[in-house]
Length: 147
Length: 136
Image (tube, rainbow over all chains, first blue to last red; front, side, top):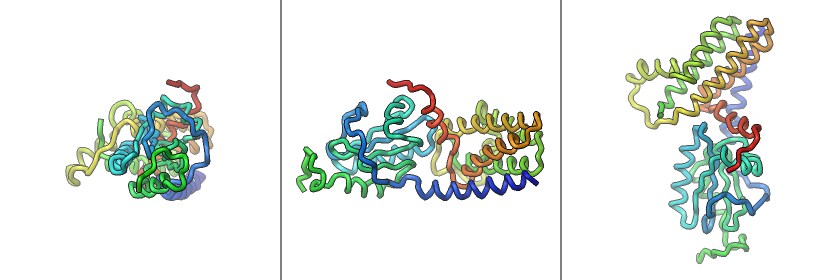
């Protein structure tokens, strides 16, 4: 009898958890203003950088790599860098990363403007990049767009 | 190594069913059998996934894409740990431990089967975060 109750609770809880996770997965949210002068170990993109945290035991990391790589190719001045979370636990703690993939979108001055945990959709990344690099808002940009 | 993601989902579905039966019947033997399946999945090859590969996949056709085998293998290892804890619970008569550990493994299998979400894989980074940092 107890087993039945435990089973029911687990399945109901699992369904709720799954729905919440699916809804939140890959959604790009505004990032809180944080450490900007962080060394990611690689040079940043001219206009924006897509920083992806991955681990070896991460199913959606490969697909995320593909999506972000495509976006970086599509949008000029945007660079995609992938960081092995395990070897950069300092960054993982700094940015309070709990899951992989976690994607940070950095503007030209290296400030985090958006972040997503889980695999983001390509269209969302492109839309977020549009917000990340508006020449009129980002006064610190050393690379004016021209147009 | 690459695997068919449909096989993983199938394996997770069978695991969900077996663990649900463990909760309903309270049978430590069924949990022990599932523990063996987890051990094989973590160190050799997942039996349910093999069944999918050799019996079901020929009828379904090739997969549209493949997935890396390392994450599910790690998750099978976590499942194994929970199954062992559950067996200890049964052996010592601590029923909440037996049911709790079985339910935890069931939750992970269910999320994988129903949502394609690998809970064990998510836990990996959290475990690594808790360990003292190796900083390169």
